[in-house]
Structures are given as structure tokens and as C-alpha cells.
Image 1 (tube, one colour):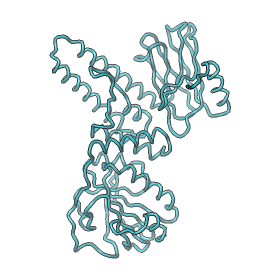
Image 2 (cartoon, helix red, strand yellow; image 1 turned 45 degrees about the vertical axis):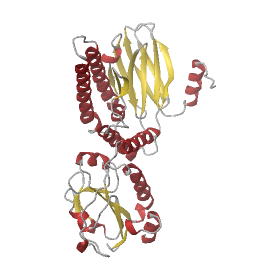
Image 3 (tube, helix red, strand yellow; image 1 turned 90 degrees about the vertical axis):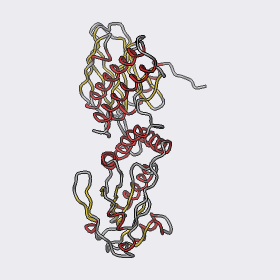
Image 4 (cartoon, helix red, strand yellow; image 1 turned 120 degrees about the vertical axis):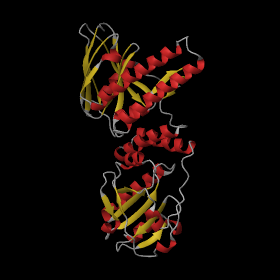
Length: 384
């Protein structure tokens, strides 16, 4: 059984350990809270971890310090009794809160961190939606079936707003992570607003944030959590099977290369011929496929390892959902383009996805994935 250090001792050890580490500060005032205990805690993947506390005086002022997050933004909370304020911290900033009991969680202000302001907006909407759900549940004039329909409508409208205003607009932000991981309570009990394991549309929300975080925080535990849930969700929801494309054998060449000139997320055209002099991996793929996140990790490893030696990736998406593709590849460092009419897939004789080709420095196709011997990395090394 784990021994739990007394809170004061644990706090002393924590602050002693981070005296010389970069820190952030949380300060402010909570009015009408004299003699109340204010707790400052960290929301970790393993649960809430108390960091410090203070008994508020007549003016309600407080100030806490803690070690700055390393590797990615992290999440924290301030709590007085059952009243809780959630916020995020990116680095060594100072966050200033102004609040008043007993409406602390619904009327506070925060300065010093844009994601924390967005988390405040989300929390307020969440509280309003929760109040709507309670009102429906307690309405004795409604039939049970009507209650269920009303609850589902309220939740769906809230989800659509969160998706388009907070997840798809800036998926790399801490507020997007907070938005996609939030929970609600209704007649069924507490549940995740976005179901990462059984709802295909919800899985896309997780995948969007996971891909964005993987682009800037690839080693962070929270990124691993998002990616694992997205991959499992895609598997559970029977992600679209690999597409079958008509093969035009007459246009497939053994060597040489037929130009590909497709737009990226900013509508800028990219030609494969412009990459002459480099070893190029032309990759036909679907980001919505269940294996996509894992393949992206492999591509990133190869790109980071060999790009300086002249290796480039030209990745062609055939996703039906262009919006999803744009967010999925927004932070990828290689060339990411999209095709809608299937012309290139027919010219290159692509029958299944994913399929890739290796091109040497003379713009000659030397290998197709269907006939590859040895690992992809070994073949790239040979061409370099």
C-alpha cells in the first residue's frame, strides 16, 4: 500500500525540488471568501495532484508558484469547496484571476494565457448545458422519450459548437485538448462529450487534436494518450476500408516519372519534378484510415533522420473529408497535397491505399511498395 506524505511535508518537498527550476505564477483575488481554504492542484493523467493551499484573508488575495510544464502545456485548477476553476499553463507565464464566491466558477476572469481564457468560455458553456440537461430531467410534464430526444438535441448542438469553435479552429492548443476531453452528466450518468471509442465523428475530433499535438509535442504522455485513443477508436468504428482505384496500366512506367502537381492546404501547387536531386517518397494515403497515425509516426522518424541528406516526402491524401485532411497534415514538415478526382492514382496504377513509390535523385521511380524487398529505411539508405 502506498504511503502518502502529510500534505505540508509533500508541499515542502515539491517546492524545495523546484526552487531553481523555471516557474509559473498563479495569483489573484477571490472576494467574499474570507477564512476559506483555496487549493491549487494539477490535473494529471493519473488524477488530481494537490500542489499547495492557503487560507484566504479578508481581501481574498492569493499567490502560488509551481514548476513550469516541460514538453507540452499542462492543466491545473483552483478550488474552494465545490467551486472549481480549470486552466492551462504553457511555460513561465503569470496568470491573474479575479473571482467571487459563491459564483466563482461561472463569473471569474483570467489574464495572462489565451488558452485559459478559452477554457473559461468552454467551462461556462458546459455549465449552461449541464443546467439545461438537469431542467429537462426534472420536467415532469415531458414523456420519457421526449426527454431523451431533448437531451440528445442539447448535447449535439453543444458538440457542434465546440467542434467548430474550439477543436477544428486551433487543434494544437491546450484549450482544444480540454474541449475534446470534457465530460457531462445526464440520465445515463457521467460520460465523455466526445466518445473516442465508438463514435466515428467523435474519433475524428480526437484524431485532429492528436495529429496537431503529435506535430509539436510528439513525446508528451498526453499526446500518446490522444493518439492511442484515436487509433483504437478508428479500429472500433470500422474505419473506411482501403479504397480501390481503377488501374490504368498503359500509363504506368517502369522508370522515369510522370509529373504530379497538386495543391497543399493553402492551395499552393507542388510539383514532383521540382524535387529532382532528392530521394523522394511519393506516398498515396488516407488520413482517416485506422493505421494513419502509426504510419505518420514512421514517416516522421524517417524524415527527421534523413531529410538533411536529401530525403523528401511527397504525400498525397485521397481523404473524402478535405477539412479533416487539412487539420491532420497542418503540422507535418513534408509536402502534403490532396487529390479529389483520382487522376494521379489511375496514372500511377494505385489499386490499394496506402501505396508508395521511391524516386531516386534523377527523378526515376525505382521502387513500388507492392514489390519492396527489405525495409523502407534500408531502401532509402541505398538511394541516398
